[in-house]
Image (tube, rainbow, N blue to C red):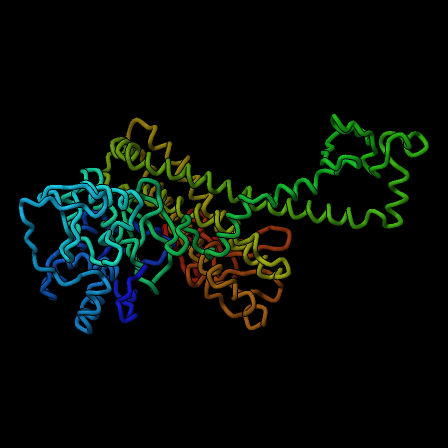
Length: 580
């Protein structure tokens, strides 16, 4: 709560300046993201250093004690410029608002008199009576310690502690708090003070990874919201969920809620069960005849098809595996609404299951890839260096391939959430999305196979393998091509697949996101002039064809080259003669 002065004026908080300086982050940026670094990772030591710099600056410019500078900065959310602006505009109003009252003149208390504490009403010696720096309200050290301990236990509100005398609004400086509380409370208080530098700031947030103590300063309006902390955690600055580019935060929130909600359970029950006609409990039938007996205590016998009592059924109604009554009623439309609802629920469940299973599979693959990457960086890279007699610095292409695999698995995982919420009536966009997703996934599988399986040959050998340089070229080429595939996919989805509408106009406009257009035949065609990923077309039956009049695909690394090129731009393999 922001305190007001006696004239009703209130000092507000300005969030236009936060006292942070831009710094470069020495961390790895995933290849599918913008190359521009738009965030800074801060350790606790760096945050504490910035705090001290701000405190020193305010104390020097305003000619106030350090304790006063801390109280001012805490009130104005550590904004140095805001403190200076408000102070020089109306110093007295600021003092009243933040509790920096004029320091009172000291009043000597006769040594023979034992003052009474205003809280516990006990007689205390003079040396045990304490008063804040900005007022003369003295209380005993025991009551002060209890008051401060309670405030610190309650949370960060202790940073704006005021004099316990009800009419007084004098601030209590951290020097007094540090001198009276226990070591444990001192550590808590300093922790709250440190964290306030980040938590009061819209340009900074703590990394949401469990146990991580790094903070992130973000530069708005530049690049994506994806953040990579020094602890290795990828997260979205806007919603603090796992990094989910190219899917927006709203879609991610809906998808996570759907995965955790009971709606799909109800859909499954509706699609795969029927209620008992007597007790209404849902019953699933997976095998056997149409004679159903409900579980105790109901024990009602009924027909699964028409839900009528089984006592009214027999050979004349179709026996155990059919029901004439149901067929007759169905012809009359009696069960149309119930069947329609059940069919809709079944279709909805099947569609959700399709996307969720693939989303979860890629999440598992990503987790495994992260484990493999860590194993490669800590153990395998040294082993590979010894086996192939090559310095570790020459083997960066292997770790780069695994880093690309991890990032592509993350992107591919979230494309399934995107696909689930893609409107079904937009068939052209759906087909274009599935084509781009399929091409990207195929490229990723080739890269993953090469990095995982083909590499084992060189790790298990006893001597340097002459084919290692060819493997290097192939893996580096696949890494580059896969990166291109996913950059195309990410750009297309972030643009809302808007190029589909442009291509349907018949003008053959090229895709800004992925260099694609729709030909007159209705097939999607990737142009190879700009090095786009995975050229070719995919027809309605899911088949694909590579090559064309304006491009050719390398058999070694699958890169799509311009038709005039005689060698692959990535791996330098000469174009087959038959392809000319």
